[in-house]
Length: 93
Image (tube, rainbow, N blue to C red):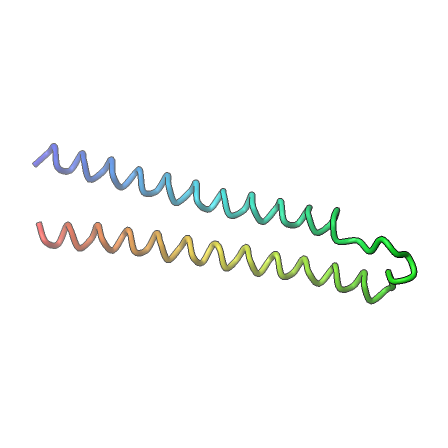
C-alpha cells in the first residue's frame, strides 16, 4: 500500500513538472513571436509605411497575446484531463 502511494505521488509530481514546463514553453514561444513582430514586420518602402501601417503592426501584437491565452487555456485543459484520469484511478482502487 505504501509503495503504491509513493508511486502515485511521484507520478503526480511528474505531471505537475510537465505542466509547468509546458506553460513556460508557451510563454517563451509567445515572447519570441512578440520580438519577431517588432523586428520583421516593417515595410521596406517608406512611402507605403503610413500611420495606419504602424497601427496595424501594433494591433498584430494583440493577436500574439490572444495566442498566449489560447495556449495557456490548452495547457489547462490537458492538465485537467490528467488530473481527472488520476482521480478516476483512485476511485477504482
